[in-house]
Length: 124
Image 1 (spheres, rainbow, N blue to C red):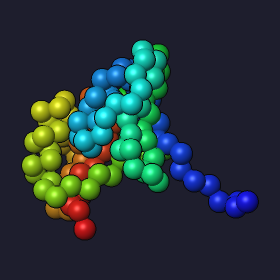
Image 2 (spheres, one colour; image 1 turned 90 degrees about the vertical axis):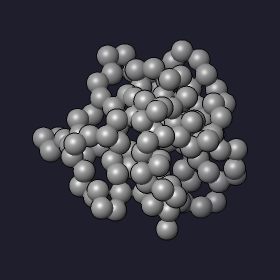
Image 3 (spheres, rainbow, N blue to C red; image 1 turned 135 degrees about the horizontal axis):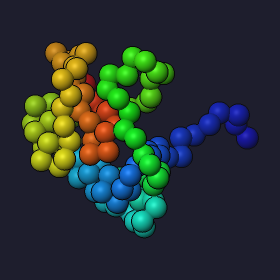
């Protein structure tokens, strides 16, 4: 038995789990594999790739971006072939691009429909 952990899943708080699952499912090309009012999940179906879950949080408040007055929250970095094209597609799916862009020459920060920041990064 190993004493190292294995990532089982990433879970994001949400005011609407199904809508956020639909958004990230479309962004990543992954199907929604579970959906109920309080929880939804998407999965690539590939062994070793952790699914993403979305849990309902009553009175959810989106994190501020940038949030220099509190501790930093995590965010997702997503590889894409064309950052500009991926940004435009994410906009059609409901994402927005905040004004503050600390690495705009290398990557782009977007906000998902629930306000979570995520980054579109050029595929290495």
